[in-house]
Image 1 (cartoon, rainbow, N blue to C red):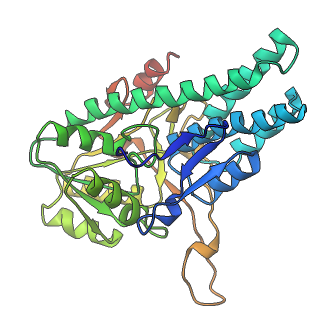
Image 2 (cartoon, rainbow, N blue to C red; image 1 turned 120 degrees about the horizontal axis):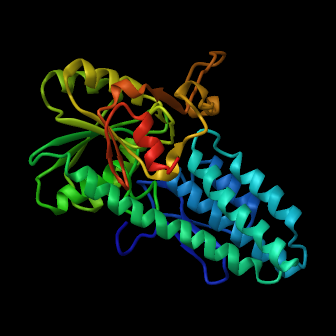
Length: 343
């Protein structure tokens, strides 16, 4: 983020400190997490959010909670399995969460197979969580370099939701490309869709971009079409919460609409994501589970029914390229994704 802001960090006692993103941009408040229940609540309530970051947070939270169990003498293989299952289920669409928790669970299982006891397990889980974080930092940097090459000098980039430093362990995904282009002196500016109903674009993307000196304007979601028609948008770059084997992408609700608009106006539409966001087990986006959020997130008249999906799926044919930590994938995506994942 910046020198004075840490989105996530270890506490001296092994707990985890999170920047509460529900309080931004009005105030910078931190929450300390030491139990599985506290981390699950932070993830569900979006105090910590962004597909890569919730994976990192869950892994760190699992290690922190294991430390407390070890102090009580009750850290067992069964406890790890139950805790991992609880955390992995909190946000069903974001595959990074399941991926990170599974890595920690497998590390624990291997430890018990080898050592037969919990001694040394907390250190092993903490090491694995830190490795997941470190890997994400490196992947974000690589995504930024690859994505910046797609941004011509003087471009206006439209983005949706928040796919920056607040959503990852490093520079971000979609916004990593913007940050690198900015540092290269490309005179890039950003238009951030407000992103209803929780306004992550207006609250979070504008906050972090402005804090890092990148020119940014926010617009209501419905203004994107008019801006494209006026020639005010040069390209669209969004993040992703899950990418199927064929290149279909699940991302924050409203992304699909932007892809359709970009196609209609002849504007390149790119998605940026690390390898941990790809789910080779799902053949297409039709199989991606879509999280339904509470009706309380929307302001409606009493008695009105609410449908509040957190994500939609953008078909692969609407995506001009997928920016990854191993370069930019070009359509058709089936074979490039298999090569990316080593399958």
